[in-house]
Image 1 (cartoon, helix red, strand yellow):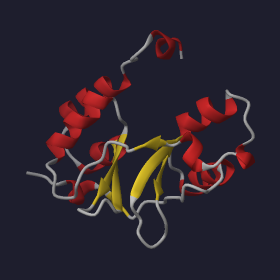
Image 2 (cartoon, one colour):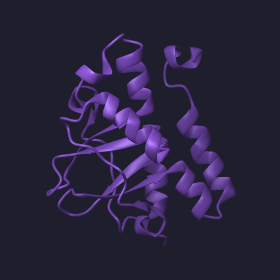
Image 3 (cartoon, one colour):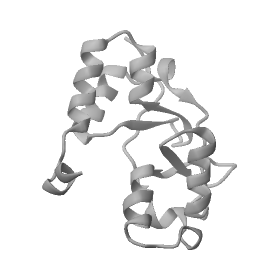
Length: 150
């Protein structure tokens, strides 16, 4: 059994709920990442949400909002699907497919963010080309007619 902690990216960049969306976008650029987990505060680090580059595109840019006037808490996905460090990676792959997720935060028993697992982590750290291809295919399927147009 391969555990999440063996392939996760540890200590991912994250932000507070009060962080402005333009600061989140700068963080994405600086760290070359698509998701930014949102944590309660610097000391507790409890996961409260996640913002993706898609959230920025659809909820801010396409909605003609001012990024400097929008807080992370306004556009984040609350209570994101997450996993624990000792979870079997096969179970996480199933979660990714079921929920069509490209990345999943890893939290400890107190819901503190300790890592994140992305499709790239799976592709780069596991030698499971067939399983990786299956996950990518399932996650990438359009889930609505609107998504199919993009």
